[in-house]
Image 1 (spheres, rainbow, N blue to C red):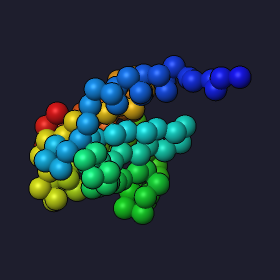
Image 2: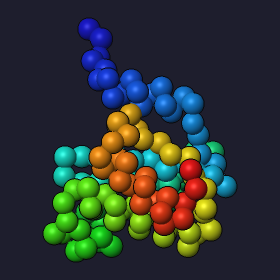
Image 3: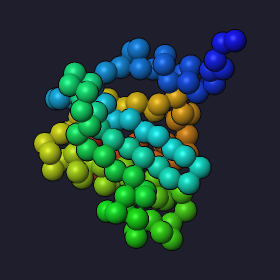
Image 4: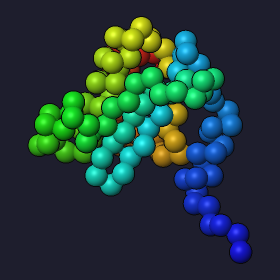
Length: 119
């Protein structure tokens, strides 16, 4: 019997076939669970994560404790952009990871753009 593939997994695979991150322009990938938001910059040529941030990481845990999920996602975008700028990264390729570009995913992207990342 074949493994069931969800529609999000199909979208994710279709997106990943088309985009790839490099050291100069890494891939900004998003993952959201029901409770937390995760974002990271990935260099696909070497397979390494350059910067990673999440709502449950020590750096943001206390800041987002009283925020709603969308406000917490904005803080993730701002923190990721700040960390990327500190490492000299100004441009990224956005990977929504099969999630709709709406709500928390859009909030992370908008906050990262406002903080200075180009994509």
